[in-house]
Length: 312
Image 1: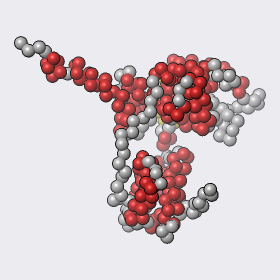
Image 2 (image 1 turned 180 degrees about the vertical axis):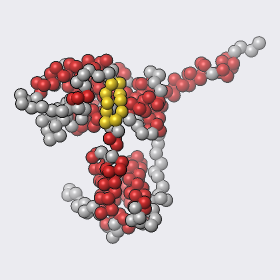
Image 3 (image 1 turned 90 degrees about the vertical axis):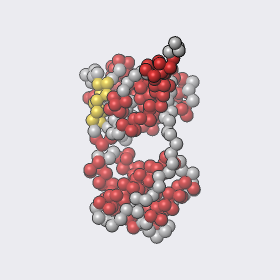
Image 4 (image 1 turned 60 degrees about the vertical axis):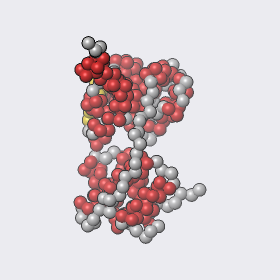
């Protein structure tokens, strides 16, 4: 089945993407995702003889209904609606339009999105399954120790520079979304795995070859790709006896956050380590605390203790 051709992007869409990069420091992945969403909108509007900059509210509402019709999840529809709203706010601010046709669009109703989380035992099995992996010199075990020990995004993990770890650091300085730097503590197991990997890393390169990445690759990017790491993670899950469908780089990021909170970490600290701009994003992990908090209130609250006191 042939893909439908995508119309050339309009100057307004190009200007919006340029603004995201210049003013908000959007990454290439973000720009590609926003561009693809607006390309999809543009293709739909072309069938109604409209262009994005001239679309009316009725056309935008019809577009959102079409996404629901083809079975797109409410979360994905909400993400596309967010892009659309940002685009039209930009057009209004830049005086490319006199109104905002997206301002009255309703957001889809979302259920509470509980993140998938592996247990501590499952994470241990996953890491253990990679320790004796033949031919990788401990690379995969190092990747997992860092990912689970720091909660990095997978793009941050695979692009870690060699300079970040050459002096056995106790913290990593990570450049995340919006080109913002943050500090993340390194666990002792992660530091040990990195030290071991550095001893064999040079052997993965040709004699006259150098790389600035901690996890180099001979591919076009020069470093291990997100896609290849995800594949290796699925293989590790199979070896560990865990359903590969339950395992992804993001699931390990979820496990990092959830297990920290279970252990008593405060939400603000977890927010800083994850690199969330808004603490509301981090609050999705508080579901793991529900039982602990209920028990805390039952055991420690004065009124609860008074109710348990026998009548005299």
